[in-house]
Each structure stands twice: as C-alpha cells, then as structure tokens.
Image (cartoon, rainbow, N blue to C red; front, side, top):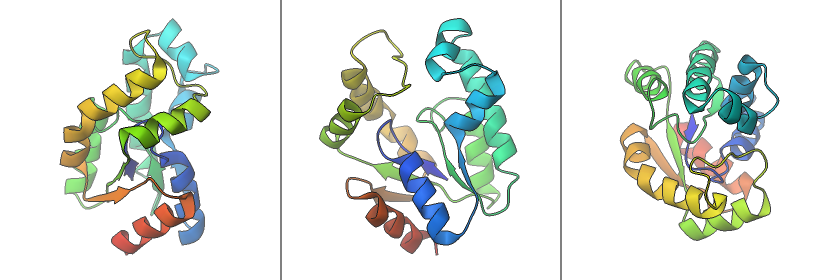
Length: 169
C-alpha cells in the first residue's frame, strides 16, 4: 500500500509497480469516487463535504484490502484521518498489508502539483500548491507512524517502483 502527500506519485508509481509485479492495482481515489456516484473529488467536497469523502475512502479501502496481493495507492489523507487510518493500521498489524510512504521534498511536490493540479480540491480555499505542501509537512509524522518503509519518490516513476519492489520483496 502506497501512502504519501498529493503529488508524491502514488497513482503513477502504484500502477507501474503493479504492472512490474503482475499484481492488481487500485487507485483509492478512483475507487472512492466511484462509490460516491459523483464526477470529481471536488464535486464530492462541494456537495457532500470532506466527511463524506473520507467515508467513501474508508469503504473503498476496506473493499480493496480484500483483493489478494493488491497494490493500493491511497489518498493523501488516508493514513492521517479516521476511519482510513484505523483500517490501514489494522491491516498492517494483521500482516495483510505492507505500507510504503512515498516521501518527496516540498520543492518536488510543488513542482509536480504546478504541472498537474487536476481534480485535487483545496481543503482550505487557499492556493492549492502552497496548501498541499503545508498539509504534506503537517502529515509527515502520521505518514511515518503508519509506514513499514519509506522510499524517496523524487525520481522517475520506474526508479521509484523498483525501489519499492526491492524493499517489499
């Protein structure tokens, strides 16, 4: 299971790792969005609020953890906000999940987010890049406390996927 801040590469690296390992892949944001019946994460935040999004994430995570040998790219808040955090810690303690924190410098996160903000809603209504970097910094202790391994995710997708493969095998 891959955790980390917005822009750390969870989705891209997760897909590459799953292909490399011939394992199923779940992008938790996409799975949670499908459960809401809405078209975008921003729409969920606007119409139903962050709590509804977190509930959808938790339901998608619970469902995804049932898939044998799945690679899951979590949303950035999953390891920090219950009920996702509780599920992640339970799966980790039961030995049904290995959690890898994709860690990036604030500069790398900002550069990546500047290129592709996509469907990433602001949590505070402020500048989404500055906000994301601040949120990532504030969540570092949570990412660290839930991770079995930390991988530098600043490099190319294929290199990061290989680094993860090396630590989980």
